[in-house]
Amino acid sequence: MMLTRQLIFRRSTKCVPEALNICRLSHKLSRHLPISNVLKQPVKPIVYRSIRQASTNSGVKKTLPLIIGISTVGGAIVAYNVLRKKESPAKETDEDEFEDKPFVQEHLQEDLALLEEFGPIPYLLIGAGSASYAAYRAIRTKDPTAKVLMIGDEAFLPYMRPPLSKEMWFAKDPNVAETLSFTQWDGKSRSIFYEHPSFYFSMKELLDNKNGGISVIRGKKVVKIDPAAQVVYLDKGEKISYKKCLVATGAKPKNLPLFENADNSVKKHVTLFRTIRDFQKLEKIVKKNDSVVIVGGGFLGSELACGIAYKRGPSGLKVTQLFPETGNLGKVLPEYLSIWISKKMEKEGVKIIPEVDVKAVSMKGKQVELLLSNDQAVTADHIIVAVGADPNTEFAKASGLEVDPVHGGFVVNTEMEARKNLWIAGDVSCFYDVNLGRRRIEHHDHAVVSGRLAGENMAGESKPYWHQSMFWSDLGPEISFEAIGVVDSSLPTVGVFTKPDEKEESKLIVDGSEKADDSKTEEKSEIKADTAPRAPNISDNYGKGIIFYLREDTIVGIALWNVLGKMQIARQIINESKSQDDISEIAKLFDLYTTEESSA
Ligand SMILES: Cc1cc2nc3c(=O)[nH]c(=O)nc-3n(C[C@H](O)[C@H](O)[C@H](O)COP(=O)(O)OP(=O)(O)OC[C@H]3O[C@@H](n4cnc5c(N)ncnc54)[C@H](O)[C@@H]3O)c2cc1C
Image (cartoon, rainbow, N blue to C red; front, side, top):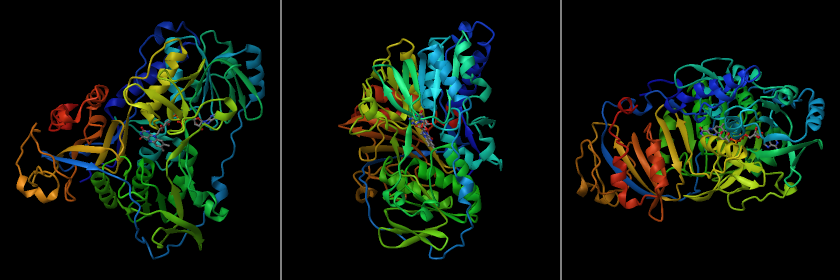
């Protein structure tokens, strides 16, 4: 049973308001006071975590013993179902209302002239996202009088993206698209922006202030970097010289060629989702229309499906999600778990169509019609395409920067450095992880960790990437998980679960369901080292557990399924490259039978 629909930021986010306040205070003080002491306070990690209250315990008085499931999952593209035969009347959508008006930064030319007069800016951050913001804070901690200039092509000051697909859809405030606030872990409302606008200096203030600070140029795109001359070029040919530069340009949503090449009449009804603007646009569309289809079964598509279904309630809006995998998050989670999630999401009001591709798209009256891979059709007022993201590396060629042919993103070393005095962080960095090899990660915590590391190194450190970042997702009121390392469903996995239904007899099943009955074993309240593994069963209920991802018998990834506060243990296991032979013992470290309250 769902205990609450309110999304809250909890536990690990607790440090954030304090950390931001320290930062804000120190920055403001810097206009009037010597700041070095204030800034010497440690900057705590910018970690955000959202979860529904008591989600792990909902409807559960007590957990019962475990199931161990081993699976190797491949993707599949099979058939599909037709969702709705009935056409619902589309409401008129005024597309002009949603047109993006380009943001024009006031006094830009004057500011650039001031900058030219000043000479190379000590720290230049390209991209005004989470990685850049984390770098800014690290720089100011190491170099308290640093002058930092950030350039972003969005109209907004730095903000965090995760609430855009989660908390913002569950907000009770009807004006959420304007206030851009959400409810965090302690039930308090907070802004999606890292800082109040008054936190940032104008260019003149920044250049004049002997204690430094930060200024942001918005609505401007960097089109080229000359790493030898240490100059960046903006879209109208403007030049900015730097001493140290960070590239943190993030990623942009992928589209499907089908939608890209469609008529404008179709395109008007299609949204790609990444920014505040996209949220503002989609929120209006969801309020006005009767049906949406979400194409894509990954994190973004699945979170949006849950959020949008909640926003209008089960009778308000038809929400359909379709994807080629067999279940939601099918590229990340083992198949049994992703199918289980899909069933849960259907209960939350999302119609799931797995194992399909979109073959064709056209208008049918005022609706968009999608022809799927089994020749059936689905119509909707609006389509959301959530099929992944591509790193923003457009200026790589013009700048002579290397892009990784396998993972995408700018190639950097373990110190996040691409060239002399040029660092890369966040979604757009392809870095060398000393434990897990070359990687590129598109997650908030990685943006913070890598941005901070790059910032520290820009300010004179020479630190390697060693801290494994984590990520999380919340889907509906009963599903919340955190993960670390390589979490990829194409790897073999071992899952250790408690059963949330105390009426069910616990079973340990060896080698698939046929032998299940022979190996029935009663467990009570601990994970036994000699537990025999079994294949997952369709009727299993996955209340709480750990999923280990294996590469050549080594644990390379861990997902904590409705298990809270154990990320540090998982991180240590990954860092120590533990063998799968130890899994039963390792699983005990997570103390799955401790209730949320007692582990807090
Ligand atoms: C809706 C949504 C929900 C998410 N939820 C989660 C979650 O629950 N958990 C999680 O771990 N991760 C989540 N993520 C991923 C996470 O937000 C990203 O990994 C993170 O934002 C990456 O930070 P970044 O600084 O690298 O890039 P970004 O935040 O994308 O910032 C890069 C900025 O640079 C700008 N830019 C690009 N090119 C240029 C240029 N040439 N010149 C100037 N500016 C440029 C971009 O417009 C952008 O503003 C989510 C992402 C989205 C979109």
